[in-house]
Length: 173
Image (cartoon, rainbow, N blue to C red; front, side):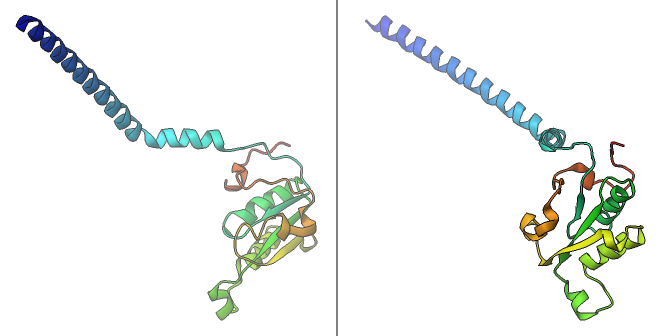
């Protein structure tokens, strides 16, 4: 009986060693995969973001909206769309004044600054309409804030074309 117990005990020890060896191999492979994903996270995340971005070609629309912020880019893109005849009206968000524009009336707020840039770029005053009052965020600038200007609005915030500098847009003629 002693021999049977020793052989059973040895078999259990061998199974235990195999299990620990396999578990160690799985843990090592998992660590290699995690390290690889971590090292390649930037291209992986960019690829995932590209899958989520909707980037349709720009086509004819009734209106383009210039939301608050980025006065160095948004009015230029809107003016380019207007000049190409892709929109007939530009609606500009009436953004809440900043402290500097309230204190020193010489510095215009974003809404007024965007309107002035559009005028300088050749968009006629009759084609520019301001909307909202003291818009502080994108929710204020949504369809409720746009009111009657929302008819024909065919712009999505995630569209890449509104993040590109002028001249870099893919526009269907």
